[in-house]
Amino acid sequence: MATINTSLERLITNLSKLPTIGRKTALRLAAFLIKENNEFAKELADSIIAIKEKILLCKKCGNYSETELCNICSAENRDSAIICVVEEPFDILNIEKTGQFNGLYHTLSGVISIQKGVMPEDLKIEKLLERIKTENIKEIIIALNPTQEGETTALYLKQKILETAAKNIKITRLATGLPLGSIIEYTDKDTLSGALANRIDY
Amino acid sequence: MATINTSLERLITNLSKLPTIGRKTALRLAAFLIKENNEFAKELADSIIAIKEKILLCKKCGNYSETELCNICSAENRDSAIICVVEEPFDILNIEKTGQFNGLYHTLSGVISIQKGVMPEDLKIEKLLERIKTENIKEIIIALNPTQEGETTALYLKQKILETAAKNIKITRLATGLPLGSIIEYTDKDTLSGALANRIDY
Image (cartoon, rainbow over all chains, first blue to last red):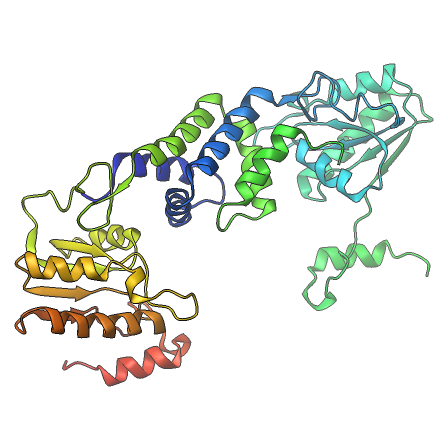
């Protein structure tokens, strides 16, 4: 195409590499950036560079952090006897948003997946067991996605924790059931059957 | 939220300002950028800066360009007797992709819209009439969107061109009708009724 300019094509190609962004959306974003003022484009570009320069993974829990220990691990008002185990750092953001949890976190950096070739030793499981041994942990909340892979990983974790830790450690997991606001007619069979099996007194 | 880092929040805020990108997608893009290598983030940031530095609007037709005249206006093998009138520069990209047009373009930079307060004098209509007077134009193809505003603008343009130019200029517009591959059952009433009214011999 004679009309595509080098710098435009370059931007569209780069934007198309981002997840959820197809070529049509990339075109739209490029058109937006061309119309917007220079300050916004510069600010966006700077913030992309800054995130690569500044974001580390917390040495202790694997959360995103700009310092060696993240602001949860270094906070003094958190309950250090409870660890919530998550798959990825962004899960921490979502759990924090609930305002319901005041303990610490541990990021596995994935889940066991035979399909994707992710084995237990690829995850930060040893590090979690190490934390359980050295920190004074009373409860582990397993907050993995309720998928096949999440379930497999949860089961593996439970066994390992029980093998490693003193028997009096409490292991819990997030409740599964109907999402609030959902409509039973449109709820999938597995969710509904789990919600029935785990029904609670009312 | 204690867990949101300054640089992460800054990037998410900036990404959320882009069209079609909500906060959830912005989070996903940020997570992707954190995982990707530094080279990609740098290349993306550079290409955003570059587009603002390099992209101009062609002095003649209003197309995106890195030079004063775009590569269509300055090409020697294009038919300079036909001008295709479009709303925005990105329409030129799409028409070029068809490979069916070898003339020149003229970008109006919008359409007449009473709702949005866009009047004829806000568009590059005078400049088009000027081109018709000074260049040796035989045909004007009106390639505006087949919307209410596009139709209004097309009608206005037609009158202005006929007032200005010699009567022997040919004015055409893109055909409307059923999109290829569409299903009549799902086609809106106006498209279908237009396709009937404009039916062609077979």
